[in-house]
Image (cartoon, rainbow, N blue to C red; front, side, top):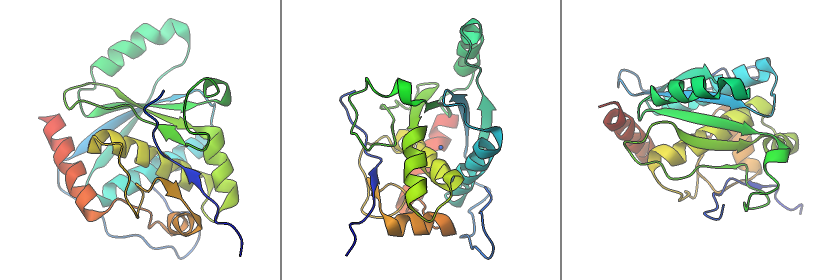
Length: 214
């Protein structure tokens, strides 16, 4: 029997759509809740625009299944634009988040589990621009091992880390998108569009977003 393939999405205290492929199904989304978040992306890994767009669509779809809409914005990387970035982030409000897609050179010094796909520090309910981090090279490695496309795995990984921010917990679930490790069956679910938040998690997500919007 082959050893199950897995990578960890676990957060270490020591230190974000269109389905691809024919005939794939999706659970009907919950609409009309008024819950909306904004995710600003800093793409340090220089992901191709097409891949990034498809990954954003996947993250959007996953959150929409939970009744939360997502708006995307980009943030420039050059040092001369840092002040402008800061002003933009400060205007987001508590329902706005920053996603850092990190390059390999940015990860080596972090005291993070060797297989982690990302991490998200705690996010107080009144804080603006809380940060979720994704290790793109590890996401790519996982995608190469399973049935889901790179865009699907990246989109799910982003949803997982932003999920930590909104759930205000580093805890993981036994099943679904908030599992600590994604195994073969999870990647199969991701390829079909079924790697999602559990209903109770979805309820918490909607309530949390609405609180932050108020």
